[in-house]
Amino acid sequence: MISTYQRLKRQRDAGEIDGFTLIELLIVIVVLGILAAVVIFALGGITGKSAVAACQADGATINTAVAAFKAQNAAIVPTGSITVAGVSVSNMITGAAVGVPYVTSWPNNGIHYAFGMVAGVLNIEVPGTAAWAAAPVTGGTLASGIAYAGPTSPTAGCLNVT
Image (cartoon, rainbow, N blue to C red; front, side, top):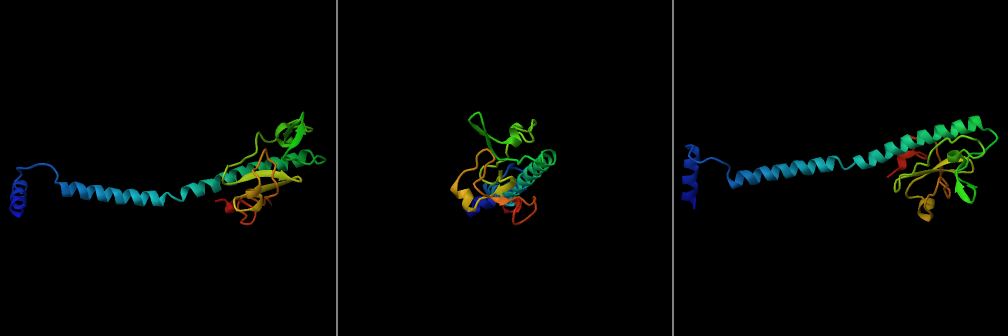
């Protein structure tokens, strides 16, 4: 076996044999596998970061809409939902009693966060809270939640999104 290896090595060095050996191919495959593993682990945190960025953008949009609603309708409390013709809807979405909608829908990123109104205050719910576990968010109505204090507030913002 050693003599066969030495004979093939001499032939290859002399240029009589072209191509790659099995060992060379295996080394290349192993190196590519290691590089792929490094890339996968490096990109692992991107999902969490994108959820935080989406929450920050949604929070800023809804916060602006609530501020505009309150500025133009000081006598009316913005609601997460009201009943119109037997259907529970938000006066922020339908424009009921104010004539113009301020948002088209309540942002809600399924498993990461949800926004809604509780007693005229914009709230956010994130996983890990009792309200999140108790009931799903529907149509901008939160069971409770935390008063939204801006996208970068660690106690009431998007930094708690997981």
